[in-house]
Each structure stands twice: as structure tokens, then as C-alpha cells.
Image 1 (cartoon, rainbow, N blue to C red):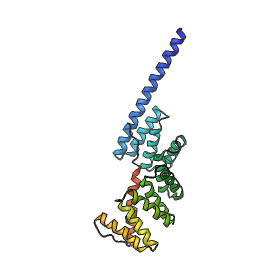
Image 2 (cartoon, rainbow, N blue to C red):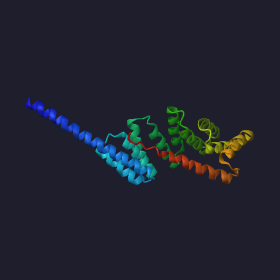
Image 3 (spheres, helix red, strand yellow):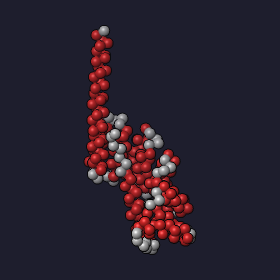
Length: 224
């Protein structure tokens, strides 16, 4: 009887310790998310590491650590952490998306495209991933596929100026002038200004908007 009581008390004690550890992990994760929102990715990464020290199985904190490392420019480490997340949950869309951004930043375009393709297969409404696919296909010389990707973006997000611009630019490149002018007309209307469609302007404009889509790595998962 006494042994049984001791075992029960030990189990209760272990349960209390686990609750404390989980509570600490959640607090550190919430702290890390706030730091990311303040554009302090390195500090955020340290907070997420503390969350994982308190609870090594806390997948949300591991994902957020990968995001923070990406934002801090530590691409190799971000890749490793995000792959760990995907080993546990292979269809984790946010991990797939941010790992795609890592590969895109590293110039690993085919690998990045494969990941964004997986994201849209899981969520056909994700216009951010379609936008990234459009950019990647364009970089890989797959203009027709890029056109299809940007068409998906403007269908899902009709006021997306970057997608209308890039779609028009690609259609001009393919010699489809009438379609191109229609898209560039929408772009001008949305922009409220006349666009210079010279090659120099085109590359600068597209690059600027591509950067804004990299910012979708602000995907950190807060506590609920």
C-alpha cells in the first residue's frame, strides 16, 4: 500500500514538473514571437531555443526557431531546423514555405519551386506561394509556367499589383502584346501612375516586390 502511494505521488510530482516545463516553453515561445514582430530575429531565436530546452518536443517553437534563423540570415541553420520540423510533420505548410524561401535565397531554384508546389497542393488558395512559383519559374526560364502561376495570383488576389506587373512583363516577353497591355493597364490603374516598361524598370520593380514576398516568413506561430 505504501509503495503504491509512493508511486502515485511520484507520478503526480512528474506531472507537475511537466506542466511547469510546458508553461515555461509557452512563455518563451510567446516572447520569441514578440521579438520577431519587433524585427529582432536573433533575440527571438534565443527565446525559441529556451522554449525548446524547456520542452524539446515543442514543435511550434522549433518551427518558429527556423523562421527566426531565416530572418537572421542564418540560412544553413534555418534549413536544418526546418527539416527537423518536416521530419515530424511532413505536410507542415509554414515549414515548407519558409524552407522554400531559404532555398530561393540560396539560389536553389528547383528545390524551392518543389516546396512551393507542395504548399499549393496542400492549400490551393495560397497566393503567396503561387507568386513565389511565378518568380522561380521565370528565373528558371519556364516562362509559360510563370505566366500560369501569376494568373493564379491575380485570380486569388485581384489587387496584387506585383503579380499584374510581372504577368504583363512576361506576356510582352512572349510576344502576347494584347494580353500584356491588359495586365499592365490593370497594374497602372492599381498603382495610380504610368509604368515605364523598360527592362531596367522591369527588373527593379520585380525585385522590389519579390522582397515583399520574402517577408511572408513573418509566419511565426503565436500562443493561442
